[in-house]
Length: 192
Image (cartoon, rainbow, N blue to C red; front, top):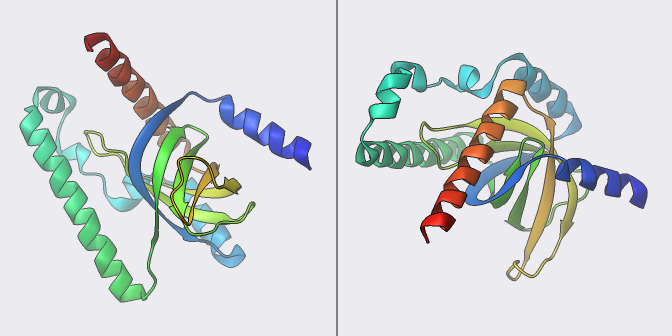
């Protein structure tokens, strides 16, 4: 059994990853819901399912957009996400769980979560990296491991989550984000 988890761990490491820090939300998924959600995720990329705002602007407009306007847009997007979350909680009566994404790759994420998650548990992830244009990815993930580490506060665990079901276009968006973030970090190091 340990050999299997080592293989899974090395597979996760086979993908380019970057350290980040942004909130992620998720729900635990039952076996019945898993298949329903899986078919929806595979059929269309997240932007097509949830309504992508980016077709409103062409690439030229995005490249020439003032940084202040971009920051305002991201702030408004974040606030709207929060309002939608509150409305869903009221409607469903179920509170979304939240974690803090610590690193991300095309194969999965590592997150800090206040609570307990079991190895093998399936979760329905919603990932919104802080980037412009806004990126939203919905995927099904499996908990590879959950353990208390040095960066965890009281009651928190660090969970490694492998994307079990993700649309390939969404995976490509994440990979693009990872490379963009790596370039930003390298540029910041050079300037420091």
